[in-house]
Image (cartoon, rainbow, N blue to C red; front, side):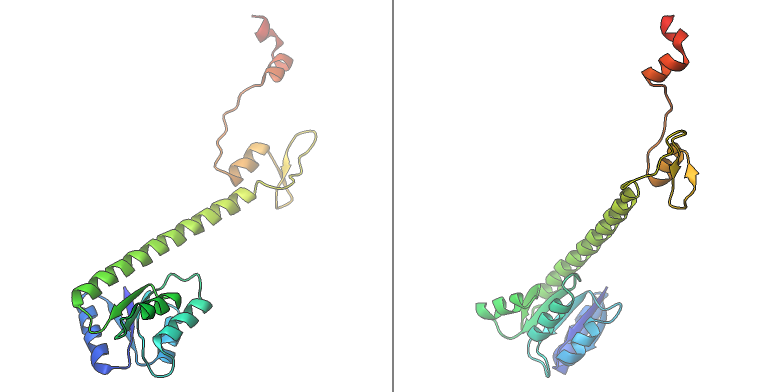
Length: 199
């Protein structure tokens, strides 16, 4: 999984890159807020982002807020990294759209644990998006059977989207998962096989 580290402090950035590289992450780096925001919005951008709060240009909080406003439905996991540790600072980060918050100097085991949470979050969101897509496809499929269907008043064939006529069974089979088992209703039994009822 890819991860973006945005930190203007070279030492801190290199330390994070080394730790995450050993954990198997593909690391992308940025040294300021503007660069971080740009890299968060490209195709194939990392799903997990660690933003330092204080950076040149835009700070991490502003980057987080602007990204969430522009991409409200993208399940990106954003962690704010900062030396600030007051409750009000934590609240400010979360209100801006951060998913988590790590204070400097960070503990490796805490960082690893929080990244694990991030990975589970991203995986769940992707699976949910897949299910939503499958549901939408299913609903689109069902809609094919909605609306007014022209049916011949004599032979009861249905006119399909290609303007040709086909048997009801064929039309429903092509537009749903229904299977047919032919039988005879009581009225037709009496009409076409009157002798059967007498026996």
